[in-house]
Amino acid sequence: MARKITLDFLKTEAASGIVLGLAAAMALIAANSPLSAAYFGWLKSEHILQIGPLMLELTISEWIKEGLMAVFFLVVGLEIKYEILKGELSDPRKLATPVLAAVGGMAAPALVYLAVSGLLNGPHEGWPIPLATDIAFALAVFAVAARRLPSSLRVFLLTLAIVDDLGAIALIAVLFSSGVDWVPLAWVAGLLAVGALFAARRKVAAPFWVLGFGLVWYLTVLAGLSTSLTAVAFALIVPVSNRTEDGQSPLREAMHDLHPWVAYLILPLFAFAKAGVSFAGLSLEQAFAPLVLGITFGLFAGKQIGVFGAAWLASALRIGRRPTDATWLELYGVSLLCGVGFTMSLFVGILAFPGAIDSPEQVEVKLGVLGGSFLSAVAGAAVLAVATRRRKILAQAAMDTRTD
Image 1 (cartoon, rainbow, N blue to C red):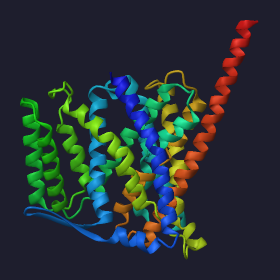
Image 2: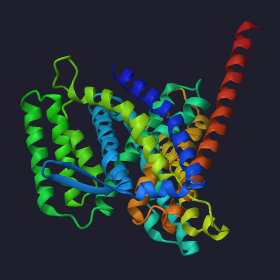
Image 3: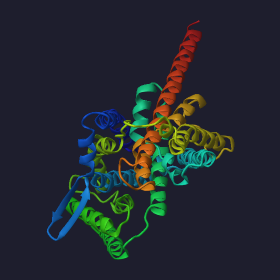
Image 4: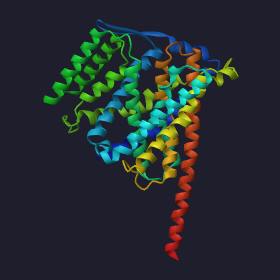
């Protein structure tokens, strides 16, 4: 059953990569066409949501970042909890190599970024941007380039990306949650504690989970805390074994119901809102600014060095082992795909350099993320295609030998 859940997740996330790519392309077209003013004006327009005495006024860009992306982080939290309790992460032996690779894949990009930034006198604040892997895009490229490679590589990539997301969420908590209002935050903590107590003792109907998440989200916005953190915290109290009327656990049911919305609506909408960068008036100096180069090299060079180096070291020290039936060349191709940062990197970029969506820093963040992700995707696809062809040749040679 755990394998079926993982494969369903892989199929959904991989397929959504095509929609993500189209959304990003549409954003670039809109930002560099006669629709540019309307596109950026729409993102900056403010809208009010009022339910009785509860009222919030945010821009479209903020609604997407703090509202819709909270649902994305809720799904990430549910996936992390499920994998730890029931899935691939429940076996420490399977967990060691991708976790160590994820740690290396976070440390090396940060060091590469800081090295480039220090060398070119760039801003040091951007070092968290190239740390995370975009699950949907990376799996979409893998699905196209490596259809005949072992499924263990897919599980390795998914596990690593989940740990990456968890690390990025922890960084958001530590680095980007200043100026918190502690009164609404205390209410958030109380609601989470009550929800955990009820979930442990009795069945909780789905409408109460929805209402509870909405209230926790609202109080988090009032507290000035990143909604991604409380979304993951809320996911951790959703029971994995308390059965609903149709026999499914609330966690499984939520994962099943929310995955398509996240994959085909929320992430593409976020990509459309954040990938739009206008090239009008863009100088060569800005295109190769220290911030751009730091992020690009952090994603492209740092990720492959950190992921592949840590995986090799784990195998050499016998702490972990290579994915089943996979070669080092195939694992290197997957390591390259880990440099596809996109949605999570753009999200962290917004937090690292707050300001207008078309500010110079935001333009440079987008250029760096798009450049590093594109290079990683192309190089990873090329290596995996070579590995696939090599495997096919070796299989044919083995077959010919048996025939002789």
